[in-house]
Image (cartoon, rainbow, N blue to C red; front, side):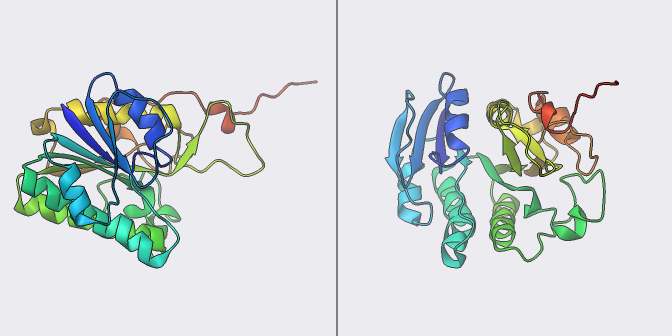
Length: 246
C-alpha cells in the first residue's frame, strides 16, 4: 500500500513514520524537511496549496493527515480547515478511499463536554467551543464528514491531546486526563491502514486515542474495540505515586 503523509515533519510525524516505514510505501510531505531516515520519498508540500496536495496524492492508496497550525488565525484556517478540503478533493480526483485525519480531542469535545461530564465518547455531537485551534480543526472534521456523505471515501479521525515520553518526569502540574506516549499514539495508524473498511460502522468514524487513565473523563473503548489498539502503561508514573509508611 502506498501512503501519503501530510504534515509528516511536525510533532507526531517523526513517531508515525518509523512505525509504518517497513510495511508501507511512504510519501512524506511537509513545508520543512523530515529529519529522520526512512525508505520512502519526501516532498515539499503545503497543505494549503490545492495543486501541491493534488500532485502529491497521485498514485497513492491512502492519506494520513498530520498537518496542524494552532495560533495564527489565517494560517490555522488555511492548514487545519482548507488543508482538509484540499486533501478530500485530491482523494476524490484520484479515487483514494482510505483517509486518516487527526486533531485535538476538542475537535469534538470542547468545554461544554470536557468540563462538565465523564465517560465522554467520540460519538458525541461536536461542540468545539470558541478556541481557534479547536474551531479550525472542527471545520476540517466537518468537511471530511461531508465528503464521505457524497463520495465513496472512508475517513477515520484520530483525536489526541497530551503527549508524553516515558522518560519524562512528572512536574507540578497535573497530567491532563487525555494523555498518551508518542510511541503508543503512533501505533494506531498501522491499525487504521490495515483494518477492513467494511468493519467500520460508517464512512466517518472518530476515535479518542489516549492511554488508560484514572480520571474517567473520556473513553478510549472505541479505539480498543474497533481498531484493536492497545494502550501501554508506559506513562503511569505521571499519575501514580509510591508512598512509604514510617
